[in-house]
Length: 280
Image (spheres, helix red, strand yellow):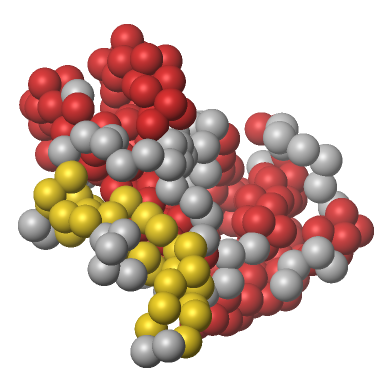
């Protein structure tokens, strides 16, 4: 709808955004999904063709508007995060994740009042949260390097399947963009998951047969997770139940291979089966 769409937005001066909006196209009434979108030329109001696309775009757009509003703090944050460059990590990603945690942890505003409220609530916490996040990411990346080092080199034939499973697990935890994609409540658990991987590797080298028993429990779930993630990505399905299963699996791995680290929740074959039953 051309009447709704606008470009060159520098502040929240457009009232509230409904979740959906009817519009006319060639005499046919259709539904569009409003979002504040970050585009190359700047911020714009757009009607998108699906709720999922609108939700994703709107989060990025509101974050960009917040970074524009608090530009001085964003610049300072980027400068302070430059120390992570030797670990090959983007200061921009930490800056974006900091703004998400400070301003958008309880939802993304869709009206001016909610936007101003989240600005007021978060403005004093930008730098302190950025420092906390930087420390967390630094620890995650150092453990990631350690696990990667263990997984490289010559691998005995007897443990190839275990190492393949570990490599797939690692790719699912730390990858380009993981900081923004990982749920806030799970991000702090990544050091424990990586520690669990290190302990599993140490034990695997001493007693490969014991690892095989654990691997047999994990492989069917990992295969199903991989296939379901691919199917959901193809069909643009957003299913919180799949996210629940995905993180339950990390806890399940800890319970099997590094039990002494403890788990965030009670997890078993039965509980995983119940969680899978909720997945679309």
